[in-house]
Image 1: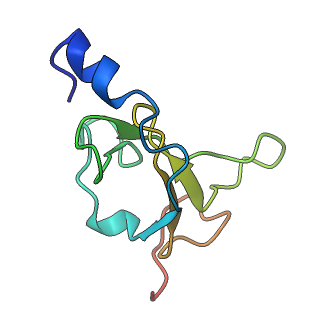
Image 2 (image 1 turned 120 degrees about the vertical axis):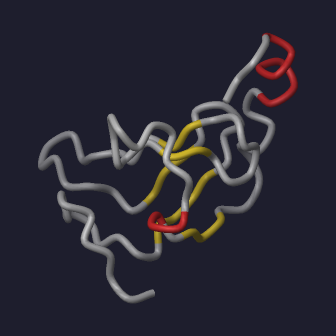
Length: 91
């Protein structure tokens, strides 16, 4: 997690133009497992958070995500679009 302002300055959108990485949501470390099974720590910068987005019209869970700090983009290979209960598919 972020500890000081220098972390933000060093990491802010550093990876936004890098290729999309494929990850399994079930393998990620949760930011706060007691409050949310959705928020995960970014596996690239180790300080940002992946929030798991939803479609604004249907509220389906999206399979793509981005770190709110470093900007690294991800595709979840074990979540099918629309699964609210995060039932993982075989990947």
